[in-house]
Length: 321
Length: 153
Image (cartoon, rainbow over all chains, first blue to last red):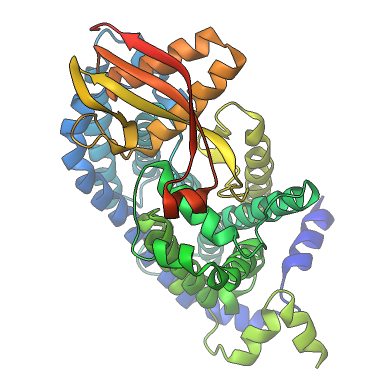
């Protein structure tokens, strides 16, 4: 069993990872950074709970008609609005508790349940489920398993440091995995469309078609959408770079030298989708910054050679030179 | 060190399960086992195709002088630019194609409860278009699938 995991890890790992002395030397500062970033994570969830306050009126004037499983219990209430109030107030208390006492596991469990209930409610009004806060929710689940003394000030055991860092990396890997899955979907979809003779992702008109269809769906506009519809060829490099960034995101999770570059790329991708497609993933931008721009695993001296060496596909050729 | 090994294996198992669960969620009616999702966002490039739309005649008991598309009914309906409503209308259209009465009733209940307030009268349209041509020229073909009428609820 151990052999299997090690083989998977070796497959994804960079060709020449740092020696164990360097790794151990880097552990302490990485752990210190991770501790701060985890606290910021819970601080942000309190901020989120605070800014959705203006929606309280909205939730009082609309009835959840298509209940998701986390809020299915609302159907048992005579007046579902009472349950809605409970979710909103409970969610806020959970976020506040999490921000104040994130070192305690029960507070982190409360945050996860509070967010699960709120998002379950938010997407129980019919139509599609939005995904702007999914990653925050899943990460709040992962962070429940932080070791008991992870936030202790002063000296902690090396085991605590390692376990905290491993869970932090799990958060990074999960985020990158979702991008890779998205890339995989695009690649699979394109192959399917090529086979059935349709316009596909690599067609010169693909970008314009995506934008026009998206904006027509709900009669909306975007800052740069119209320009790209009229200059579709500019979309080809954007589509190719997007596919590369997404498809190999999980690869980058295993290579600390790429964390900064991939984080920057994915943030640009989200800003682009907002400016062109009018789809906002603003909370994901913050999360990516937290996990990758300030990654605790980023090596001290990253140079362009190490980045090139670790790049998926290109790195292989660079190493041969 | 045993605890560390457990965490290590737990991480690998969790990531693998999320990946497999995400892919399998495509097979479910919602394409998601909340919050496990495939993350297949924009996997298919839109080609000229038929979609569904709502054309409103009467909302909340007020007749409209000119029938209007839902997404252009600013000030008449709740959330005219809601992507949720767009998705619901697509499901409604597909349910009509299958003549799935239970699903039609369910979606109409959701629509009329929160978005197209009753009493109301509206058409479900099948709209065929090339997205870029429609964006640039407004060119499309529309065909009325059915008309719904609902009394005050």
